[in-house]
View 1 (cartoon, rainbow, N blue to C red):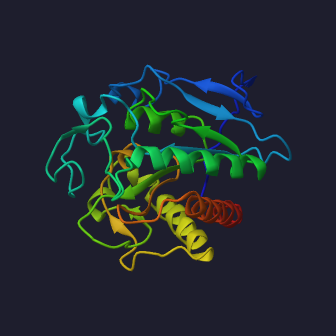
View 2 (cartoon, rainbow, N blue to C red; view 1 turned 180 degrees about the horizontal axis):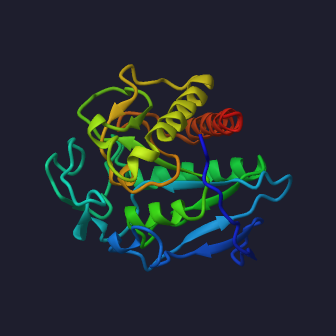
Length: 274
């Protein structure tokens, strides 16, 4: 498999007390699929590893967290075809919310709060392991919709990982899983060129989580045609780290982040041999 080559842009020292060098990355209107984005006034933040840099950028996407994203709509797929599976957007829909609000944990905590917390933990682990990190959401609100986040990652990073917890009707923690590409999407552009790498990345992440003792959903993976799958032109994984019944304490988030790091390391080690 060929991993897309990329150029690390110039970095400036962050001025808000962060000990890592960082730089804002905005959506470029000339990038492929950028015209499908409806919310893009915000920016991602690229952080540079402090030592022993691997010259690989990992895009970390803290799911949800765009104020007003559920009130603005865009196309589900770049060819403007309907969705083929049910998600937060029903099967058969041509348009979808730019960013869904996310679910709420049983204790009343919004999913977007927890995804941001683990994204920051994972960011620090990756930086200390030598990876540069593109934080697609670094604050409570980022005015970047799912397509803007995806297109920025496509043009900046080597891989893109979206962090979520599933909203379902289960009354127990069902465990982690990744979202696989449905058969009906595998022949479409750009998915047909990347679905295998999406699934290799997903399997690596699950392997890493399993390795640190995280419960894995018995039906892993689950097939959905997510907007970010449909617009990704680099290896992408939407990883669901549990559901609304899951433990999301600081201790558990640190374990999950360590498992994700192990999965990322495994992915790069294995794909470097291909």
